[in-house]
Every structure is written in structure tokens, then in C-alpha cells.
Image (cartoon, rainbow, N blue to C red; front, side, top):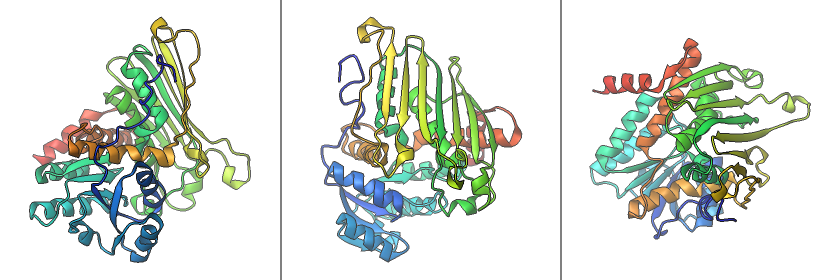
Length: 384
């Protein structure tokens, strides 16, 4: 890769000096079995125990990934002296109880846990997430949230271009998703689909690149395919994010993506585009082709001579979002705990992503642009 492009390691997360820290895994579903643990083994991390409500499911995942200890209850896992870091991959309405339980055990000296990697969304709304972040802070437990799209290799490399000014001042950025997700059964009891599951990735990516916008305007309709299974409001979603600098970002989450499941041809993809005053970057995310391994891509051009003006640069990597990007959040937590590099996707940072999602829900419900501060100030006032 050329020196004028993203730095040679910019697409990869820094790894901890010490990879022997004992990781306890809570949850034995697809994300844990096929993403987290595959990535951890590739990175040389050290899962030592796993727990799930169905002990047989946890045992099957443990056998597959050579995890020595299986617990049938997460409460036993957090008391396990081998466990210093907990990796949680459960639904967002289940996760808060586990995080509070860890903090309580820590406060009563019944646990050695120093850090938590929590699944996104951190909770079912901003107010609940705010309470969890405060709980972890008071217990002295480091909280990182698994917003794994920001660790996708093309997304990270694009962020490096932005940070070094290769694209100039950001003017317009878009993320377009036309893909059919595998919705989880637990979403039926929530009554929501896309904003907290898919849009949250795109909102968080924009935040990683540009910071938190002032306001968001979101329009939604139900997804015809999912509506046949359960009622929901946020199927297909379109959002505009406004920044004080003049930057505008937009997301489209088209989870219908045409009647591909009903007999037509399909055209599924995720693309992003960043336009700046000095350059432009175009990216693709390979996730819609999973389980086929499809590395994400980045093409970029600039008008700056020092960075190779006037041509398209097309760096390529072997890594794919699923499962390779899942190394990043755990690596960041482990690096933070050992003091080698502070975590960025912390619970405190993630609160602004959660507030942006809640603002999007309110915007869609009330048909108006909603400032992120509106959500934050309401919840902070109630918490006092």
C-alpha cells in the first residue's frame, strides 16, 4: 500500500501486549459463536468460560471453540475467578440486568471483573443506557460497546483519510444499505426493527468519522416482509443528520430491498460515500454476502499533490467485517485495561449514539427534526 493512502496499519485495530486476560462469554447465539469467538481465536485472545440460559447450547459452542468451562447461569460466570473481562452478546432487554449484576458483584468483592464488552444496542433507550454507564463508572468497571461497524477495515481506513485531511473539509456523506437482515425473534417483543439494529451502525460510523450531529430528521415505514410476522414501525428508514459545520449526512436502510425473497432477482449491497473539499472516498461493505467471505473495499481520490492527486487509489485488504472486525472492540477494551491505548467506543461515548437513535425515533413519530441535546437533557434532568 502506498504511503499517500491510509497508513499501512490504519485499517487494523491495535492489539494488546497481553492477550492472556481471561474472557468470560455470556450468550451462545450466532454473534457469539460465529463472529466474536472466531475473531478472538484469530487474534490470540483467551476465552476461558461461557454461559447461556440453555447450557447445552453453551456447551456446544464451548466444544467448537475449545472453551474449558461452561456455566448454565451468567451469575456463576461472573464469580469465576478466571474471568477478568466479560463479553456479553444477548438481547438489549436482557443485557441491563447482567451489567447491573456485574457491577453489584464487583461492589461486594464477589467478582474480579475489570471490563465489560456490551453488545449494541447497549439498552432499549438512552435513559436506560445512561443508568448503565453510570453504574459501571461507580463500580470501577470499564465499559466498551460493541459498535463493530466502526472497526470494519474500509470504515477505519476512511476515518484515517479524514483524520489526516486527505479529503479536506467534509461536505456530504451517505450510507446506503439495500439488504435483507436476519431479524432476531426477540425483536417481536420490542416492536421495533431497523433504527436500533441497523441504523445504529450507520449513525455510529458517522459519529466515529465526524462527531455527533446537532439534529436528525428521520422518516420510516414498515417493511412489508417483516410486517407479515409482527407489527413494527421502523422498517425502511431514511435519515438526514445535520452538523453545525454545514456537513450533511444521510442514511438509507432499505431492508425490503425488493421482492428478492419472493422470487425476483436481488440487488443487495451496502455502500458509503464521503465527499470533501479536497477529495472523495467510496466504500463497499461486504456483509450482505455473508457467509461468503467478502472483504469491504475503499476507493479514494484527492486533489492534494502530497497525497497522490488526480488518480483513484484502491487499497485492498483480506479482512471482512464478519468476523474480522469483531477483533476491534475487544482489542480496544484489553488495550485500555492494560494502559497501552485508551478505548474510544466507551459507554460514555456510546451514549451519544444511543441519544441519536432515540432522536431518530422521536423525529419519525413527530414528523420533525429533533436535536440530540433534546434527548440528553431530558434524561439527565430525570436522573438528577
